[in-house]
Image: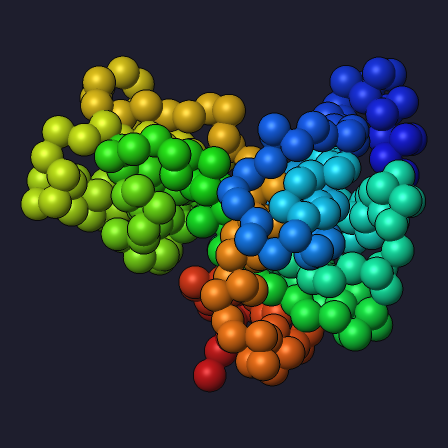
Length: 271
């Protein structure tokens, strides 16, 4: 399914949500100190998939597709359409970026392997990005608020991490919801008493079900990864490495899935 076909599908069936548009410079996320970077950033870590193309830190085009976990059929056609719409070429890109997890095991594998192959074919670096950090990134400007990034891991468990003023303060992990909530509350009590808590990700409402905690705000508009955040984080990571070390540090082969827990096949393996 191409992006243009998906737009028609949305109008007919109301099952697909696609954003594929030119974005103005003021919509950019983060600051790019290297003006020449051209980046393709992708996310397939959950039920939706998305990508964006940026130049000099400014988003040029973006696509978002949500038809369930059908990334093996939809992801690459969406990326190809995006590159065509942006009048770009893979060989002219400076950097590839992709979320590598945690999240859907299948989605992560598809995204990581696809972007790895594109970067390898183009001979360009590939930067892995945490899906939890990408979810939280648009909220990093909420000064002195604890941002809890949460992805549903089923069975009352979450893949989660927490950030304060952009710094990770509760490390990534796969935990019962109650354990993650306790870790966040303990950190806040010791380091930032009274600070508000903003939750994001598709499990954001699991932190405080109902309206029982006025100090907790589920940020429902930030349930999915914004690929512009993936691009901004990747550029920041790339520029933090000395130029002579970047080729070795960000080889495409290093773009590997991060699951944080065992796959179902591993759990069912009998020894």
